[in-house]
Picture 1 (cartoon, rainbow, N blue to C red):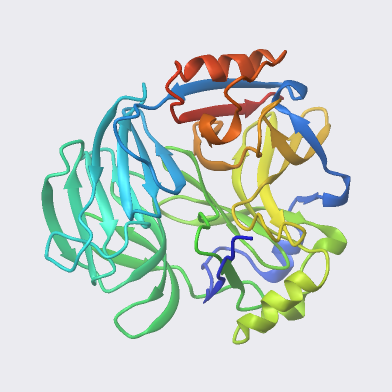
Picture 2 (picture 1 turned 45 degrees about the vertical axis):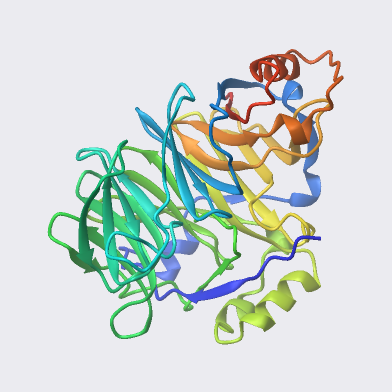
Length: 383
């Protein structure tokens, strides 16, 4: 069994125009994980796209995919690299500058793409923010930045939503809006919900930030409230609560932020659901993914989905989403527009002599072109 290590981050809180009373008055989605069922892709109404990636580079453990109009960035956690493809799947380059030098980084997991300037920004874990030109990956500049980020996501051409666990003073837990052009941070950690709150991460966990569109971030602060915020360059606004009912972590567990081991023990001691992430919200559909304590070998990332047709009220609770006749399950590692992005490794998921009556499975196998290429499967639920 793969062992994941949890790291607790004490997050003070975002200064939103809200109070504990107003948060409890928000629209609330109630999810009962006990009602979730396994589904094949063929069983669910959805649209999908398949991108076959060039096999000219060896991929390690890919834990996040960031897709833009021109480029696909794959965070290779095992190799501490960022692979770059175009959106047709053609391999372009790999950022591979691990080290302590002036143009290098110690950790490539916190990065963002500056679409206006075509720069890949990497929080180097060396008190700096490094910029590399895309797709050449020529080193452009290094900016002093004492923050060690756990969230670093673009809002617009100049502004980024950040959370850090360390700054120049020490343990901080700050949430800020960073103006990349000036380097100024606007602190939005002044007023939080009624408790300090605690972020539960593991070594492979993506953040709970969804890029809902240009200048439009959705951020879920996991706690006993699981509150979803919409963030722009001026403000963050609470928009939704996710309630797992009896599966919620009790409020007292979240207040024990100085005792992370106690929190983890409490989480696995009973049936608990946690950390909604990868939200997609529009006029007709709400969907997100989450994980719970029954997934001791699957934590994280999230492998359970909730889908609701906002017009009809119809709900779909997915325990496991599978490609028919394949091994393993689909787990999102990113969002592109209103599509979820999952990685498909045919060598691990399909037997060489696979025969299937599933049109989706047959198309996926055909896309490997006999070379067992790694695929990106983009899919969206239909309203």
